[in-house]
Image 1 (cartoon, rainbow, N blue to C red):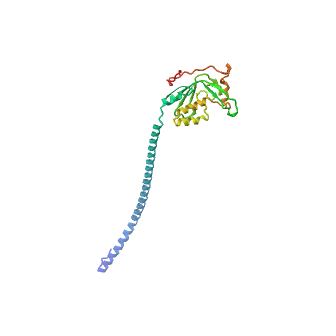
Image 2: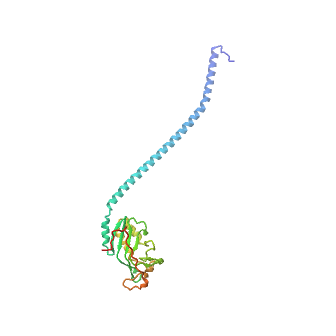
Image 3: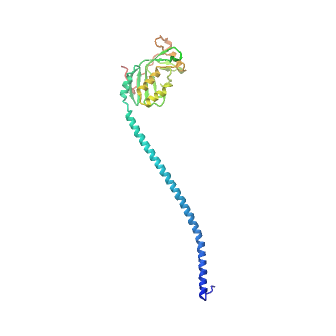
Length: 259
């Protein structure tokens, strides 16, 4: 039972004791709360720092995307300008190709050049000490895609005499490939691609014609040149096979047999 103060001094002492007890109680109650507040503040600061870092990363990404988009737009405009400057009149190109002495006719359809040749003469390279050898190559229909991706995209369709070449199959030229109407262009491949890449279609046709007018007798396929008739010499009948005429398909359309 609490004693009631009888004097003013005892009352004053009791009040002081209660004040000290109250401060002590509130200090003990406030400590955990202050600790939690400090932890929350630290967590908030950390999250704020992460958000700011993410914002900066997103800002950099957006800037990079904008830069790439601007470069793409510039490249697209430049490509359009180049296409305008390099726009080719294919009718004019075909007319120039028809003027070549080895060409009978030429047309273009489906982004492809169709070139019909006259009978050709293929020669070896006598610079290595061999005698000059000339063999007769029958007329061919050449199909040359303007966006050629492989040497095998160029087709060599023989329109006349075919002979048994490498692999024992019929072909129009010693370096042709059986069954696919393509050929092993060798070093001509890179030159052909370069001409097509620069829209030099006349020059590209000249590259293919040059290939048809050459052969390498030291190459495994070129060694079969003996199956072809020699120019200026009478060829034994058993060395040449009958002619295999090839009718022009409707895809070529306007290529004519008459000049």
